[in-house]
Image 1 (spheres, protein in one colour):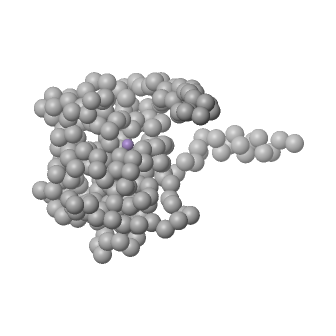
Image 2 (cartoon, rainbow, N blue to C red):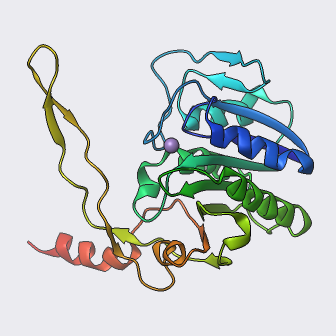
Length: 248
Ligand code: MN
């Protein structure tokens, strides 16, 4: 199996190394990852400057661009083969509910999916990030399953794994995305010149987190697997906007 890896935490991130190690028994691993932490980069492409490819001592390739750039470059020209699967992660921190819109981890997998390759984003949910090995084993379980039972169509799976020993994970649950409350306010501070600067504040707490959601699965200690799609159309509002446009 030919496995293409990326992430948004940068090519030096421990989660990426754990992922490469965990998937190595399943086939040939190629890593193309951003040269620095691009968490929150979403699906951005770099269009205003050239991208440069470098090779780290451990063989990982890295690019001075976004997670989306990495997968786009790899699949559309860099590699002389089409990967069988794209796996992005293991992210430091959850990507659940509305996080998926901002996430660079999910974006790298989305790019694989848009280019026709089954793709998996994998994130470790917690604060201490002790159990990358658990998420790596989950990734291996899923990629092995994909190899023996391929889907008929490209899939984009968003996977969140609790930061606990593998043997204590409370199973796997296929979920829908929950929703968060709106984000907390920006945090103002002063720079050394006395000018006001701002940090983007934390994401909101979980709001829609009932049974069947990713938040709920993680709350009970399970792995959450959410199949994602890219079409942002709100079909339910087509009649509403039609009616609104028909008004004088
Ligand atoms: Mn990240």
